[in-house]
Length: 117
Figure 1 (spheres, rainbow, N blue to C red):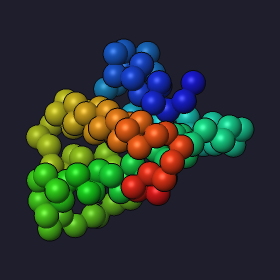
Figure 2 (tube, rainbow, N blue to C red):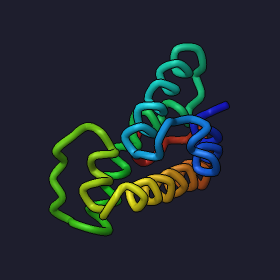
Figure 3 (cartoon, helix red, strand yellow):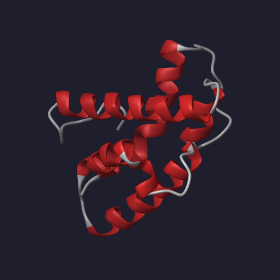
Figure 4 (cartoon, rainbow, N blue to C red):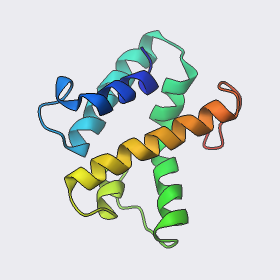
């Protein structure tokens, strides 16, 4: 299973993976998954998500919400929470941004150069 499949499954039934539906719990769970997979598998999409999803989030915020947004943290859950009102809205936006990130990856032909790499 790669990160895209995991996130799609998690979106459907998050409590199968984490104790409470909170964006920081999701990020920490996915970080652990990424570290375990990256050590034994060279799946490009896992590497890109782990390395570049935060940059994608920041660019999305600057393009859609606040062109002058200043990053205060290396955690994407913090950036997403900065622009949302409440945990459920933050989680919903996270899954939306993941879908867009993976759609871009698939549109450019998978393992080709990703714009955030």
